View 1: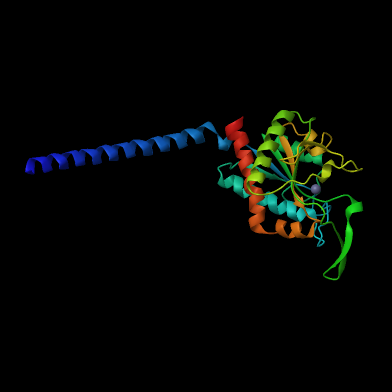
View 2: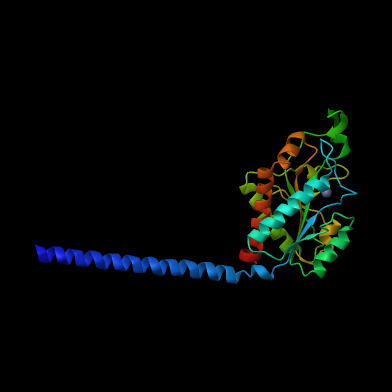
Amino acid sequence: MATSRLKRNNIYSKCLIAAAFAAAIFTQAAIFTQTVAWAACDRLAYKIAIDAGHSVKHPGAISATGRGEYLFNRNVAALLYRELLNSGFVNAFLINEDGGDMSPKDRTEAAQNAGAVLFISLHHDSVQPQYLLSWQYEGKTLRYCDKFKGFSIFYSEKNAVAGKSIALAGLIGQGLLAQGLSPTLHHAEAIPGENRALYDAEKGIYRFDDLIVLKTASMPAVLLECGIIVNREEEQLLQNHDYQMKIVKAAAKGIERFLCDEH
Ligand SMILES: [Zn+2]
């Protein structure tokens, strides 16, 4: 009996040692895999240009509550910059950080001069004037349209690496869908000012060849319209930090997958 208990204890301790050994190997393997993954994707090497569309003086679209588009763009650009830094892309940078006037071509040139491997331009959307209605907000008469809502992503076939831009747009679109957001298809309507070719309706990707900030970029480039700020409900969402972070995380994940997994 005593001998058999001793044997059992012996077997039991051997099992424990084997389990501990296996766990140690597993942990080592996990650390190794993580190290290899990070090493395979040299995040330090990637310079990512983040462009906040428009400027303080020329803010772009005016929201339903009278807020200039640039303020929305600047905010999301700053959040994306921080998110990329936190993901290890410490060489991400903002174009036109001070909000001064800068032409689209100057923006892509600045990205190229800095050695950017990717260019993302952040915007907030509007609609054609015939859709705008008037309302009173805080004593002011302002314009709004609640008919359309959602994000859209643009690429240009005239971009130097259009195929890669499409891939980047696809990954960002996928990320936005995964965050529960939906695209707007209003840019495809056959009316003056729109009439854009829908490349991927599910992910809200449009082809817009002559968009200067995309066609003059020498690197993969996309323009993301985060949402429609003339839509009264969507404008409120777009000012909500949690909602902004859904957009930012989708964009950052798409960029990460583009640089680390897919290419
Ligand atoms: Zn814009």
